[in-house]
Length: 351
Image 1: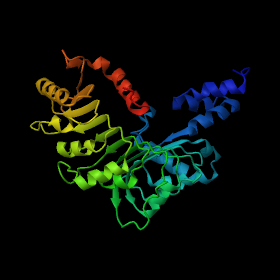
Image 2: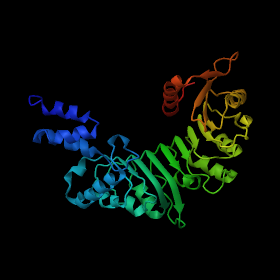
Image 3: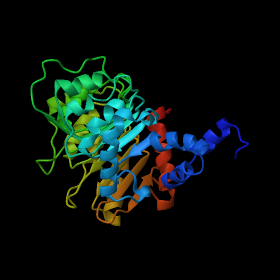
Image 4: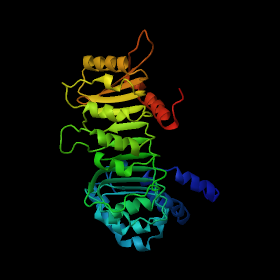
Protein backbone atom coordinates (compact mmCIF):
# COMPACT_ATOMS: atom_id res chain seq x y z
CA UNK A 1 0.00 0.00 0.00
CA UNK A 2 2.80 2.56 0.72
CA UNK A 3 4.00 2.19 -2.89
CA UNK A 4 0.61 2.86 -4.45
CA UNK A 5 -0.02 6.32 -5.93
CA UNK A 6 -2.40 8.53 -3.98
CA UNK A 7 -4.94 8.46 -6.80
CA UNK A 8 -5.28 4.67 -6.61
CA UNK A 9 -5.48 4.62 -2.81
CA UNK A 10 -8.13 7.32 -2.94
CA UNK A 11 -10.17 5.29 -5.43
CA UNK A 12 -9.91 2.14 -3.28
CA UNK A 13 -11.05 3.96 -0.13
CA UNK A 14 -13.94 5.53 -2.05
CA UNK A 15 -15.25 2.02 -2.71
CA UNK A 16 -15.46 1.23 1.02
CA UNK A 17 -19.06 1.54 2.24
CA UNK A 18 -18.57 0.13 5.75
CA UNK A 19 -18.37 2.80 8.45
CA UNK A 20 -16.48 0.53 10.83
CA UNK A 21 -13.82 -0.14 8.19
CA UNK A 22 -13.37 3.58 7.57
CA UNK A 23 -12.97 4.17 11.30
CA UNK A 24 -10.27 1.49 11.35
CA UNK A 25 -8.44 3.19 8.49
CA UNK A 26 -8.22 6.34 10.60
CA UNK A 27 -5.94 4.49 13.03
CA UNK A 28 -3.65 2.87 10.44
CA UNK A 29 -1.52 5.89 9.60
CA UNK A 30 -1.72 9.62 9.04
CA UNK A 31 -1.73 9.03 5.28
CA UNK A 32 -4.64 6.59 5.45
CA UNK A 33 -6.62 8.89 7.73
CA UNK A 34 -6.39 11.63 5.10
CA UNK A 35 -8.09 9.28 2.63
CA UNK A 36 -10.68 7.97 5.11
CA UNK A 37 -11.92 11.33 6.42
CA UNK A 38 -13.57 12.49 3.15
CA UNK A 39 -15.40 9.15 2.85
CA UNK A 40 -16.59 9.32 6.47
CA UNK A 41 -17.94 12.83 6.04
CA UNK A 42 -19.38 12.39 2.56
CA UNK A 43 -22.59 10.73 3.77
CA UNK A 44 -23.51 11.87 7.29
CA UNK A 45 -26.53 9.98 8.59
CA UNK A 46 -27.85 10.48 12.12
CA UNK A 47 -31.16 8.73 11.53
CA UNK A 48 -31.21 5.04 12.50
CA UNK A 49 -34.10 4.43 10.09
CA UNK A 50 -31.96 5.58 7.17
CA UNK A 51 -28.77 3.77 8.19
CA UNK A 52 -29.67 0.34 9.59
CA UNK A 53 -26.25 -1.10 8.68
CA UNK A 54 -24.44 1.00 11.28
CA UNK A 55 -26.15 -0.81 14.14
CA UNK A 56 -26.06 2.35 16.27
CA UNK A 57 -28.80 3.00 18.81
CA UNK A 58 -30.92 6.18 18.38
CA UNK A 59 -29.26 7.69 21.47
CA UNK A 60 -25.86 7.23 19.84
CA UNK A 61 -27.02 9.12 16.76
CA UNK A 62 -28.41 11.94 18.91
CA UNK A 63 -25.22 12.31 20.94
CA UNK A 64 -23.01 12.33 17.85
CA UNK A 65 -25.23 14.90 16.15
CA UNK A 66 -25.17 17.23 19.16
CA UNK A 67 -21.38 16.97 19.36
CA UNK A 68 -21.06 17.79 15.67
CA UNK A 69 -23.42 20.75 16.09
CA UNK A 70 -21.18 22.22 18.80
CA UNK A 71 -18.08 22.03 16.61
CA UNK A 72 -19.57 22.57 13.14
CA UNK A 73 -18.28 26.13 12.89
CA UNK A 74 -14.68 24.91 13.13
CA UNK A 75 -15.03 21.58 11.32
CA UNK A 76 -13.56 21.98 7.84
CA UNK A 77 -14.32 18.34 7.05
CA UNK A 78 -17.98 19.27 6.55
CA UNK A 79 -16.90 20.56 3.15
CA UNK A 80 -16.74 16.88 2.11
CA UNK A 81 -20.39 16.30 3.03
CA UNK A 82 -22.73 15.81 0.08
CA UNK A 83 -25.49 13.84 1.86
CA UNK A 84 -26.94 14.68 5.29
CA UNK A 85 -29.74 12.90 7.16
CA UNK A 86 -30.97 13.61 10.70
CA UNK A 87 -34.04 13.93 12.91
CA UNK A 88 -32.92 16.33 15.62
CA UNK A 89 -33.26 20.07 16.28
CA UNK A 90 -29.46 20.35 16.20
CA UNK A 91 -29.49 20.35 12.39
CA UNK A 92 -29.87 24.13 12.40
CA UNK A 93 -26.35 24.51 13.77
CA UNK A 94 -24.87 22.31 11.04
CA UNK A 95 -26.71 23.22 7.83
CA UNK A 96 -24.94 26.59 7.25
CA UNK A 97 -21.60 24.76 6.91
CA UNK A 98 -22.70 22.12 4.37
CA UNK A 99 -21.59 24.11 1.35
CA UNK A 100 -21.36 21.11 -0.98
CA UNK A 101 -24.62 19.47 0.08
CA UNK A 102 -26.53 17.50 -2.56
CA UNK A 103 -29.03 15.40 -0.58
CA UNK A 104 -30.83 16.54 2.57
CA UNK A 105 -33.21 14.47 4.71
CA UNK A 106 -34.75 15.84 7.92
CA UNK A 107 -37.32 13.55 9.51
CA UNK A 108 -38.28 15.53 12.60
CA UNK A 109 -42.06 15.75 13.23
CA UNK A 110 -41.91 19.36 12.01
CA UNK A 111 -39.26 21.37 10.17
CA UNK A 112 -39.62 25.15 10.12
CA UNK A 113 -38.95 26.75 6.72
CA UNK A 114 -36.46 29.04 8.45
CA UNK A 115 -34.36 25.96 9.24
CA UNK A 116 -34.26 24.96 5.58
CA UNK A 117 -33.14 28.45 4.56
CA UNK A 118 -29.91 27.83 6.51
CA UNK A 119 -28.70 25.62 3.65
CA UNK A 120 -26.10 27.69 1.74
CA UNK A 121 -27.43 29.10 -1.52
CA UNK A 122 -24.36 27.85 -3.32
CA UNK A 123 -25.08 24.23 -2.41
CA UNK A 124 -26.10 22.21 -5.47
CA UNK A 125 -29.03 20.59 -3.67
CA UNK A 126 -30.74 17.88 -5.74
CA UNK A 127 -32.78 15.81 -3.22
CA UNK A 128 -34.92 17.07 -0.34
CA UNK A 129 -36.80 14.85 2.13
CA UNK A 130 -38.75 16.52 4.95
CA UNK A 131 -41.37 14.87 7.12
CA UNK A 132 -43.53 17.94 7.72
CA UNK A 133 -43.27 21.69 7.14
CA UNK A 134 -45.42 24.73 6.55
CA UNK A 135 -45.95 26.48 3.23
CA UNK A 136 -44.91 30.10 3.75
CA UNK A 137 -43.04 32.69 1.74
CA UNK A 138 -39.85 31.56 3.53
CA UNK A 139 -40.37 28.05 2.18
CA UNK A 140 -41.10 29.36 -1.31
CA UNK A 141 -37.91 31.46 -1.21
CA UNK A 142 -35.92 28.40 -0.10
CA UNK A 143 -37.13 26.49 -3.17
CA UNK A 144 -36.35 29.43 -5.44
CA UNK A 145 -32.82 29.59 -4.02
CA UNK A 146 -32.15 25.97 -5.05
CA UNK A 147 -32.95 25.55 -8.76
CA UNK A 148 -30.91 22.33 -8.88
CA UNK A 149 -33.54 20.33 -6.95
CA UNK A 150 -34.70 17.28 -8.90
CA UNK A 151 -36.50 15.29 -6.17
CA UNK A 152 -38.73 16.62 -3.37
CA UNK A 153 -40.41 14.29 -0.88
CA UNK A 154 -42.45 15.92 1.90
CA UNK A 155 -45.11 13.98 3.78
CA UNK A 156 -46.99 16.91 5.27
CA UNK A 157 -47.56 20.54 4.36
CA UNK A 158 -49.62 23.16 6.09
CA UNK A 159 -50.58 26.49 4.59
CA UNK A 160 -50.75 28.92 7.49
CA UNK A 161 -51.18 32.17 5.59
CA UNK A 162 -52.32 33.34 2.16
CA UNK A 163 -49.33 33.76 -0.10
CA UNK A 164 -48.99 37.25 -1.53
CA UNK A 165 -46.07 36.04 -3.64
CA UNK A 166 -46.61 32.59 -5.20
CA UNK A 167 -43.72 30.35 -6.18
CA UNK A 168 -41.96 31.87 -9.16
CA UNK A 169 -42.87 30.22 -12.51
CA UNK A 170 -39.14 29.83 -13.18
CA UNK A 171 -38.43 28.08 -9.85
CA UNK A 172 -37.40 24.41 -9.73
CA UNK A 173 -36.69 24.06 -13.46
CA UNK A 174 -35.08 20.62 -12.99
CA UNK A 175 -37.68 19.07 -10.67
CA UNK A 176 -38.65 15.60 -11.91
CA UNK A 177 -40.10 13.75 -8.92
CA UNK A 178 -42.48 15.23 -6.33
CA UNK A 179 -44.16 13.66 -3.30
CA UNK A 180 -46.51 15.88 -1.30
CA UNK A 181 -50.08 16.16 0.04
CA UNK A 182 -52.88 16.76 -2.42
CA UNK A 183 -53.76 20.29 -1.30
CA UNK A 184 -50.34 21.78 -1.95
CA UNK A 185 -49.46 19.83 -5.11
CA UNK A 186 -50.76 22.50 -7.55
CA UNK A 187 -48.55 25.12 -5.88
CA UNK A 188 -45.45 23.01 -6.50
CA UNK A 189 -46.42 21.79 -9.96
CA UNK A 190 -43.75 22.21 -12.64
CA UNK A 191 -43.79 21.26 -16.34
CA UNK A 192 -40.61 19.24 -15.74
CA UNK A 193 -42.18 16.84 -13.20
CA UNK A 194 -42.70 13.33 -14.58
CA UNK A 195 -43.49 11.44 -11.33
CA UNK A 196 -46.04 12.58 -8.72
CA UNK A 197 -46.86 10.86 -5.43
CA UNK A 198 -49.85 12.12 -3.47
CA UNK A 199 -49.02 11.46 0.19
CA UNK A 200 -51.28 11.83 3.23
CA UNK A 201 -54.21 12.68 1.00
CA UNK A 202 -56.70 11.13 3.43
CA UNK A 203 -55.65 12.25 6.89
CA UNK A 204 -59.18 13.28 7.86
CA UNK A 205 -61.40 11.12 5.64
CA UNK A 206 -61.12 7.40 5.02
CA UNK A 207 -61.19 8.04 1.28
CA UNK A 208 -60.14 11.12 -0.64
CA UNK A 209 -62.25 12.67 -3.36
CA UNK A 210 -60.69 15.01 -5.91
CA UNK A 211 -63.14 17.70 -7.06
CA UNK A 212 -63.16 18.26 -10.81
CA UNK A 213 -61.84 21.81 -10.41
CA UNK A 214 -58.84 20.56 -8.40
CA UNK A 215 -58.23 17.76 -10.90
CA UNK A 216 -58.05 20.29 -13.74
CA UNK A 217 -55.73 22.47 -11.67
CA UNK A 218 -53.43 19.49 -11.11
CA UNK A 219 -53.46 18.59 -14.80
CA UNK A 220 -52.49 22.14 -15.73
CA UNK A 221 -49.69 22.20 -13.14
CA UNK A 222 -48.20 18.84 -14.23
CA UNK A 223 -48.51 18.62 -18.02
CA UNK A 224 -45.61 16.14 -18.40
CA UNK A 225 -46.59 13.52 -15.82
CA UNK A 226 -45.93 9.89 -16.70
CA UNK A 227 -46.30 8.34 -13.24
CA UNK A 228 -48.98 8.95 -10.57
CA UNK A 229 -48.96 7.26 -7.17
CA UNK A 230 -51.78 7.62 -4.64
CA UNK A 231 -50.22 6.52 -1.35
CA UNK A 232 -53.51 6.64 0.57
CA UNK A 233 -57.05 5.44 -0.20
CA UNK A 234 -58.75 7.46 -2.91
CA UNK A 235 -62.09 7.09 -4.63
CA UNK A 236 -61.47 5.19 -7.86
CA UNK A 237 -63.64 7.62 -9.82
CA UNK A 238 -61.50 10.55 -8.62
CA UNK A 239 -58.30 8.79 -9.64
CA UNK A 240 -59.78 8.01 -13.06
CA UNK A 241 -60.89 11.63 -13.48
CA UNK A 242 -57.35 12.88 -12.93
CA UNK A 243 -55.75 10.25 -15.17
CA UNK A 244 -58.20 11.16 -17.92
CA UNK A 245 -56.81 14.71 -17.87
CA UNK A 246 -53.19 13.51 -18.06
CA UNK A 247 -52.75 11.85 -21.46
CA UNK A 248 -49.06 11.00 -20.99
CA UNK A 249 -49.43 9.01 -17.75
CA UNK A 250 -48.42 5.38 -18.26
CA UNK A 251 -47.91 4.24 -14.64
CA UNK A 252 -50.56 4.34 -11.90
CA UNK A 253 -50.31 3.10 -8.32
CA UNK A 254 -53.42 2.79 -6.14
CA UNK A 255 -54.30 1.58 -2.65
CA UNK A 256 -57.73 0.11 -1.86
CA UNK A 257 -58.05 -1.10 1.78
CA UNK A 258 -61.64 -2.36 1.64
CA UNK A 259 -62.13 -5.97 0.50
CA UNK A 260 -65.67 -5.23 -0.66
CA UNK A 261 -64.88 -2.46 -3.16
CA UNK A 262 -64.47 -3.39 -6.82
CA UNK A 263 -62.67 -1.25 -9.39
CA UNK A 264 -64.62 0.12 -12.34
CA UNK A 265 -61.86 -0.27 -14.92
CA UNK A 266 -64.08 1.12 -17.67
CA UNK A 267 -63.41 4.58 -16.23
CA UNK A 268 -59.81 4.17 -17.42
CA UNK A 269 -60.68 2.69 -20.81
CA UNK A 270 -59.55 5.77 -22.76
CA UNK A 271 -56.27 6.18 -20.86
CA UNK A 272 -52.82 5.24 -22.14
CA UNK A 273 -51.91 3.39 -18.97
CA UNK A 274 -49.44 0.58 -19.53
CA UNK A 275 -48.56 -0.29 -15.92
CA UNK A 276 -50.81 -0.38 -12.85
CA UNK A 277 -49.91 -1.42 -9.33
CA UNK A 278 -52.95 -2.05 -7.13
CA UNK A 279 -52.70 -2.81 -3.41
CA UNK A 280 -55.82 -4.56 -2.10
CA UNK A 281 -56.78 -7.26 0.43
CA UNK A 282 -56.55 -9.79 -2.38
CA UNK A 283 -57.19 -13.49 -2.49
CA UNK A 284 -56.07 -15.33 -5.60
CA UNK A 285 -59.59 -15.30 -7.03
CA UNK A 286 -60.10 -11.59 -6.44
CA UNK A 287 -56.72 -10.77 -7.96
CA UNK A 288 -57.56 -12.81 -11.05
CA UNK A 289 -60.92 -11.06 -11.37
CA UNK A 290 -59.30 -7.62 -11.07
CA UNK A 291 -56.76 -8.57 -13.74
CA UNK A 292 -59.44 -9.73 -16.18
CA UNK A 293 -61.37 -6.51 -15.69
CA UNK A 294 -58.31 -4.30 -16.14
CA UNK A 295 -57.03 -6.00 -19.29
CA UNK A 296 -60.52 -6.17 -20.73
CA UNK A 297 -61.09 -2.42 -20.33
CA UNK A 298 -57.67 -0.78 -20.84
CA UNK A 299 -56.33 -1.35 -24.33
CA UNK A 300 -52.74 -0.20 -23.73
CA UNK A 301 -52.25 -2.01 -20.41
CA UNK A 302 -49.18 -4.26 -20.46
CA UNK A 303 -48.61 -5.11 -16.79
CA UNK A 304 -50.77 -5.24 -13.67
CA UNK A 305 -49.21 -5.71 -10.23
CA UNK A 306 -51.59 -6.78 -7.46
CA UNK A 307 -50.18 -6.57 -3.94
CA UNK A 308 -52.03 -8.28 -1.10
CA UNK A 309 -52.13 -5.68 1.68
CA UNK A 310 -52.75 -8.37 4.29
CA UNK A 311 -50.06 -10.87 3.34
CA UNK A 312 -47.54 -8.56 1.71
CA UNK A 313 -47.30 -10.91 -1.27
CA UNK A 314 -47.53 -9.74 -4.86
CA UNK A 315 -48.67 -11.12 -8.19
CA UNK A 316 -47.90 -9.77 -11.61
CA UNK A 317 -50.06 -10.18 -14.69
CA UNK A 318 -49.24 -9.24 -18.25
CA UNK A 319 -51.00 -9.25 -21.56
CA UNK A 320 -49.26 -12.07 -23.40
CA UNK A 321 -51.49 -12.39 -26.46
CA UNK A 322 -55.09 -12.16 -27.54
CA UNK A 323 -55.49 -15.90 -26.98
CA UNK A 324 -54.04 -15.76 -23.46
CA UNK A 325 -54.40 -12.21 -22.13
CA UNK A 326 -53.56 -12.92 -18.48
CA UNK A 327 -50.42 -14.67 -17.25
CA UNK A 328 -49.36 -14.99 -13.62
CA UNK A 329 -45.74 -13.93 -13.04
CA UNK A 330 -43.80 -15.57 -10.22
CA UNK A 331 -42.17 -13.52 -7.46
CA UNK A 332 -38.67 -14.34 -8.71
CA UNK A 333 -39.37 -12.28 -11.84
CA UNK A 334 -40.71 -9.31 -9.89
CA UNK A 335 -37.60 -7.14 -9.60
CA UNK A 336 -36.19 -7.49 -13.13
CA UNK A 337 -39.58 -6.62 -14.57
CA UNK A 338 -39.84 -3.66 -12.20
CA UNK A 339 -36.53 -2.35 -13.52
CA UNK A 340 -37.87 -2.60 -17.06
CA UNK A 341 -40.93 -0.59 -16.06
CA UNK A 342 -38.78 2.12 -14.48
CA UNK A 343 -36.75 2.42 -17.69
CA UNK A 344 -39.90 2.78 -19.76
CA UNK A 345 -41.26 5.49 -17.48
CA UNK A 346 -38.19 7.67 -17.11
CA UNK A 347 -36.52 7.20 -20.48
CA UNK A 348 -39.71 7.45 -22.46
CA UNK A 349 -41.71 4.64 -24.00
CA UNK A 350 -41.20 4.08 -27.71
CA UNK A 351 -44.24 2.25 -28.99
